[in-house]
Structures are given as structure tokens and as C-alpha cells.
Image 1 (cartoon, rainbow, N blue to C red):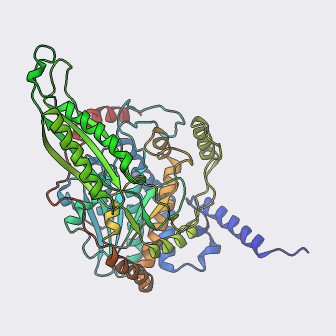
Image 2 (image 1 turned 90 degrees about the vertical axis):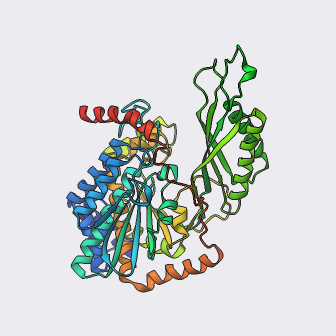
Image 3 (image 1 turned 60 degrees about the vertical axis):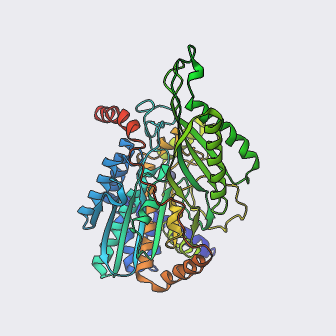
Amino acid sequence: MKNTSYRQIRHRLLISALAFGLVLGLASGPAAGAAAKAKIAKEKQLVLDWLGKPETVEKFGKISDAIWASAELGLQEFESSKLLADTLEAAGFTVERGLAGMPTCFVASYGSGKPVIGLLGEFDALPMLSQKGRVPKKDPVVEGAPGHGCGHNAMCTAAAAAAIAVKEAMVTYGIKGTIKVFGSPAEEIVASRPYMIRAGLFEGVDAVIDNHSSSGFGTDYGVGGNALFSTIFTFKGKTAHSAGAPWVGRSALDAVEIMDVATNFLREHLPISQRMHYVILEGGEAPNVVPDKASVWYYVRSTDQGLEDMYRRVVDCAKAGALAAGVELASARVISAIHQRHANKAAAELIQKNIELVGMPAWDDEEQAFAKALQKELGIEQKGMPKDVEKLEAPSGMFVGGGSSDVGDVTLIAPTATIGFPGSVPGAIGHHWSNVACFYGSTAWKGLNAGAKAIAASVVDLLTKPEELGKLRKEFEEYSKIHPYKPFLPSDATPPNDLTKELMDKYRAAIAKALAVR
Ligand SMILES: [Zn+2]
């Protein structure tokens, strides 16, 4: 008889474990199997089993799909926020709603005393991205309407599923401590977390596990993303007949245009990690009336160290625009201001072990076919869905800038790391119709379920192993000495509850009608 290697035996065990899991209708691989079971603590096994039940997968899959379908913009997520808060309340959580001055912000808590573990959860959509789910070519549900181009529909849903699973384990095994789900509106306009921190919602939280949709399944640590000022500059001038007596008028739009020219020259003299972009919100209503009001919305992004100086120079460009056009810079309304992410290494290491335990979901033939069709449409290699979870890698050390998340501020007030969970097709583009197409239906259901398992397993570790939580806290407390939290958000800034209202109101009825037809 030929010798069978350990690797072959292990491989066969994993295959049979996977097959066993699939027979039960479980969403992801090795953790569900008997092979892995022996080494897993009973508390952790309970959360994995609870989340692996087909009815759990379906329940939270349907919640994710409902949030995807209503596609509500930041701070207009009334239906999405209510669905999540109601789900947590029905599961026995105490839910406080309308917090930190934002109607759609909520905190759901279960348990009492220390340790307090927080989960972050987002649920807002992006403008202009409406797209049919699992259709691998551009095909909007409602032309021009918002869509979930960043998978946020699955994110607070994953956090809620994980929290309820942990609650089940707390009840069964008498685990002490508190779990809190931070229902965080408006991440796409980075507008909730600094206000939530300012309102004291995170006080007493010992560690935070964040999550974000992805095509891969992994986590990271270190400094990432850009800090950001989001500000609307408004100028006031004087109307006049544009042809009859233009010398009487002073164009507010001129000020916007001169400001934009000035900031575009400014780019040349900024570090390469900066990003700066704008849209003109108001620029007059007809060419034959000199516009007396104009406004422009800027995102000004840099490192924590470089942000305030860059922002000051952008404000100077606004003042220069006003001076040159002979109008008034009426306001510079800061919508939000946030830090870079400073993710905790010990948290990432703990999360990584649980990601490896859960494993990448097994994708079926239809899911692979959809992935390849979408990759073909995008003109990229047709390699389908990923097979393996990602490895935890050290930060590259070369920061060249990029996007931002208001999770950044949370990372500076409690040890935090983010679980990236799968569901999107590799190569699908963020903030684009292709990503909207991915985060509906089966791949989203499986991906968020795998994410929820990794979140819940990590929370169980933090609640039941003080030495693990101690590692996160020690690293965080040392880091806080060199990088204490000082908010960029001005003390007089208020949540922009009105910012996307008009746009959402424009599409809400059409979206509801499209849903009713389906
Ligand atoms: Zn996002």
C-alpha cells in the first residue's frame, strides 16, 4: 500500500468537511466540518453553527437584498436603518435610535459590564449607480437613481448577524460583557463616526471590529487611507442682465471657477499622497442672469500630518476666488472631517485566525459563470470567484494616498481592525454599476455570512480570552501616546442631515414602484 501523506489526508478531511457543510446548506467551508470541530471552543462553535443554519443565511441575505433594493443615500437611510435596528431589537438587543443628531444613527446593545466590544455597520448607497442585481452588463433598475456600489447593504447586515450569534452564545454559556452594534449612517459621505464619537457613543468601548465588503476575505493593519475635509464653499454675488448690464452684476459662479483653477494649480505643490476633487452644486440657473449664488463641494484628502495645512491652502483659494470675482465667500460649511485609518495589528492577527477558520465560501457553477461574464464585460481576465482567503501582510510602507473612511476616527479611540468579506467579483469596480450587480443575491448572501462568522468568532475570542483583548489594548495604549485623538471635525459642525434629501426624494417613489413591479 502506498503511503498517504498528512497533506493528502488533511486535504481529504477538508473535502469531506466541505461536502458535509454543503449537504447542510452551510455557506462556508472548513469551520462547519467535523475535522475542524475538535479544536474550536464551544462558544465559538455555537456562533459558527448558528450562523451556518440555512434559515440564518436566508434571513440576513434577505435583509441585505432589501437594503440593496431601497438604495438609500447617506442620512436618508430610514428604511434600511429601521430594518436593521428592528431586527436587533427583536433579537433581544436594547436599541437607541436617532443618536448624535442623526435620525438614522442607532446603537444596539446586549449584555452588561466589561469588556465592551463594538461592531461597526454601514448601510448607505451611492448616487447615480442604479443597476439590476446579478446582471453582468450596465442595466439600471431606475435610470440615474442611487445604487449600492460599495456593498454597504451587506455590511451592517453582517454585523447584526454576528452580534445576534454572539448573543446566543452569551445566553447559552453565560459569557460576561457587552456587545454593541454601531449603526453608522452616511459612510459614503464620511459623515457619521466623528459625530458619534463627539456624542460619546463609543465611551467605554474596549475594542471594535469593523467590516467592509470586498472580493477577497482578509484583514490588514497599520496606517491606511487618507484623512479628509469635506466642505461646501458658498459664494454670494449680485444678479444682473448678462447682456444688458453685466457690469452691474457680480458672478458667484466666477468665484467658484477661479477657486477651482487655483486649486488645480495648487496640486502641483502638494505631496503625492494628496487627493482633491469637487462638484459644483449650484452655478446659476440661466446664462442670461448673472448668478448671485454658487457653491462647490470639495473633498480635500491628505495624511493626518498634511491635512490641515492643505485644507488651509484650499480655503485661501476660495478667498482668492471671492476677491477676484468681487463677491462674498458666504460660508465654508464643513460636512465632515476625518482621520486616516490606524488599524490595530493585534486585532488583525486575531481576526486573521478566524478568517482562516471560516474559509472562503464554496461558489457554485452559476456564481462562477456570473463572475466570468462580468469579468468579460469589464475586459479583464475571466478567472471567476476567488478560492482562497487572503494572507495577512505587513503594510507596504509606501503610502501613495487613496480613499477615506470615517472608521479612521474610531481607530484612534479604540483598538480597531476591519474584516473584508467576499461577495464581489474580482475586478468589479468600486463605486460603479459592476459592484452594484455583485452585491445582490447568492454571492452577497454567502459573503456576508462568511464575514459574520469571522466577526462573531473574533468577538467570542475578545469576550472569553482576556489575554487576547489585553494584547489589543496594550498596542492601542502605546500608539495613543504618539498619536492621541484630536478630531479634525470643527466643534461647530453639525451632521448634514439635509445634504442628500432632495436627491433621494427625487428617486424614492420610482425605486418603490420598480420594487413593486418585480
Ligand atoms: Zn464602502
